[in-house]
Figure 1 (cartoon, helix red, strand yellow):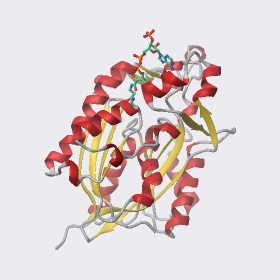
Figure 2 (tube, rainbow, N blue to C red; figure 1 turned 180 degrees about the horizontal axis):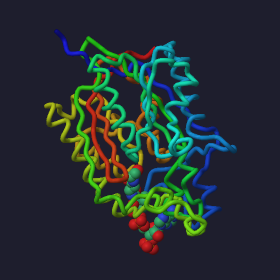
Figure 3 (spheres, rainbow, N blue to C red; figure 1 turned 45 degrees about the vertical axis):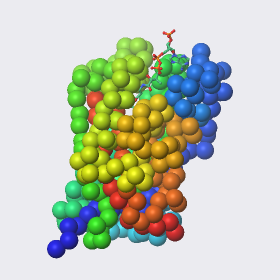
Figure 4 (tube, rainbow, N blue to C red; figure 1 turned 30 degrees about the vertical axis):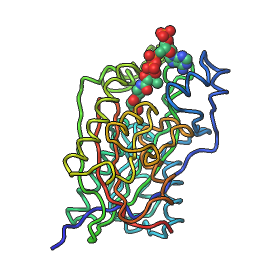
Length: 332
Ligand code: UT7
């Protein structure tokens, strides 16, 4: 009997309309379009405006987009994974709210926090669930409202991050297409280099933590860069080697969009040419859990049935990993 694979059968995405350009940032902090462009590759990022607007607003719009394009029903979805570092609220899982909104009466769900590798981890979890035969339709949502945890006076972080959300639907596939392999890694050495210090159980919120700006993302960029550039490239090359894939076998590299230089180094290590690398960092910046599904959303019309995709991500914690997948459908 053929092995059942978990294939992506539809994708959707949403980015807010408001664009925060490098030129505008020049008026807010001591930076320049030239610095941001050469160090990161970013030109602009999207920001979700409005009081009471959380991640679920973007996630539901991304799901609407998926439904509109694919015609897939959401009522029989049986699991929803929301990969994010910015859920609507702590404790109350955003996934449950989304399940209610889409009318998936028999679904269960959870939020998954693995920093920038969250969606990659979520995709691997969902694939295992589908391959088990117990789950037939699993939504993997990845997104963040990074503007809610960024200090717009801190030039070392505010130029990098943006808001956005993407979603993929996973279903069983008996033709051999779908998730073929994954490598997932983590190392707590990264705990101090990329974090929000307060608001967790170690340092609960107090007037003092708020006054000290300890509820915003803090990053030691160079340290993170050093680990990211090596590990993301190694794990992407590692999954190719383990599956006897050469650079010509790879149709697309789908890399986390944290820094164009890290993406270039990963592609170089894999031997993959620039035109096979999905890139949208220039338009959205680093949307954390949104980067990978938003790449699929942007490039969906170029993907063909049977294409070989290698995903690679690196994030806080540290967390990182790679997924090897074959695409299951032609453009509509
Ligand atoms: O997605 C999760 C994982 N995160 C990552 O993978 C991010 C990894 N790190 C990076 O991408 C890079 O380290 C950054 C883009 C964050 C920073 O680039 P860098 O080339 O590592 O810069 P740096 O931190 O070494 O700073 C170089 C200089 C410093 O000035 P001095 O000390 O040389 O005078 C900074 O103060 O650039 C200065 N600087 C800036 N200048 C203008 C830092 N931020 C800015 C800025 N505009 N926005």
